[in-house]
Length: 353
Image (cartoon, rainbow, N blue to C red):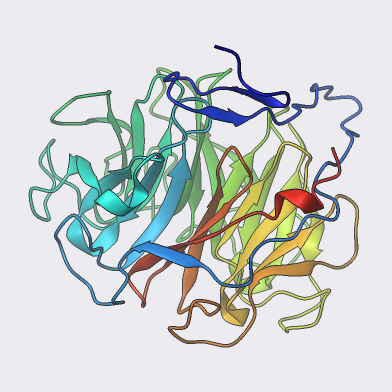
């Protein structure tokens, strides 16, 4: 049986899925046809976990969720850093409303190999191995697929400024082609990369001294690294997103940077940043309770979710700390104080290719 035109079989061969055009990668010329230049999303989100906005520890609840990750290379499943429950929850894309399963931690707060302590963010590679920013333990833990405990792959040497230490990690990314772990060290105002087999990090963004100059960061949060090893940083206290090319010593502002505010060219304490395959930048603009999309090389953004004040309604957020996009382009947002994950569905008719 064949799928209708424009669709392909999902990896598990259960459903026909959108065959979204994937632009080719050219690190010397990253201009691509932007299929989402005029895309819109539903104004009201759908909460599939934490619907009553109360914290909890069963499969239908979270407690102060932070980081999100969607494994678009595999089953499109959602992973959540369930911070105050000291665990990582996994939600099947095919049955989001059925609750999550614990795939790391969940054995109370602690520093044993099967425990986590205030995990802030999560990354899942194409083999479904899970990398976790285990914040209060100042370490990055790797849980291989199906494992019941993790191993330390970065940090784990106490809180500090040395290059084998992590002060506080609120952003994590794994560049799978180079097997490099990128850590946004909020406490030390820097982004550090750890190459495979080395416990010594290398500063790749920021100087380790907080500030607002082009070579500095001030309390960086979420990060995204593209296939060309370009780093995007949610530079929270500077209310901007900085872009650092490979092997450069200064960043350039690609979103915000016009002081803290709510205008189209401003951000307010952004916590996370993601890019889609067309190089559109999506920012969890936490202080403005909204998600903003910035087209490449634009001086202003457009609100695509939230922006209706601080609250519990389906078009509002309370501390939108992280976001993720699934393979179809739906936007997922974690809310720390509403203890929920909301999904904003893409309006397929607004895609241009």
